Image (cartoon, rainbow, N blue to C red; front, top):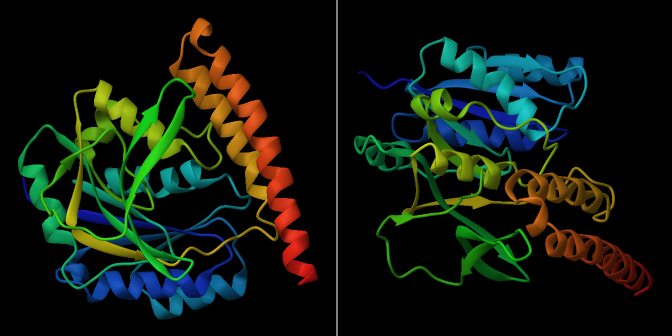
Length: 276
């Protein structure tokens, strides 16, 4: 069957990032052949006009309210699959792909058991280069942990427990077997959840270290602490969904201890930074 690719970019108050991301995708090899969707979770008439003027052939979908990461992406994924897409790329607007992007990821799907493929995510933290790879769940606390490196020496594909959905390519067959992203997660944990579900459905998750995507993390929160409550609720949902009642006790205690501690710590550092 001939490949038909779609790419979904979820915009929320960062139209400049979305424009930059889409330009990079279109400039990549075979990028002009991809069917693009912008889902706007913070629609404004002037922003919609800008998107449609710059990208007249891109599908623009607006959501009157902000339904979150999973629900927003699902809006476009449903349309892409109905239009016959064989693979759907989910990518954050603050991510930038390189020239050779689509083909290296697509080649992994020659193995019919592969359902999800992701690149390495590169970003800078405290002026140090960090490469984000695959992750594993520490089930004692139901805590997902990403593997981060300061340099990459091995470029062989890695079969993974989960990968980040900041940039990920998923086959249509995977959506048919697993379904869409769980909209019970407003933000955070939905990527881990989906990878675990795909694994249960017999699909492999692959991280390809030969493909690196830059991620210039932009925040839609006025205060970093605002994201903690959202992450806390998602963590509780994740615990309840994936663990039996008897195994939930320690993860619940961990979550109810961790997030208040982080709130106090981040608040302290925020006040200290403001007073310096």
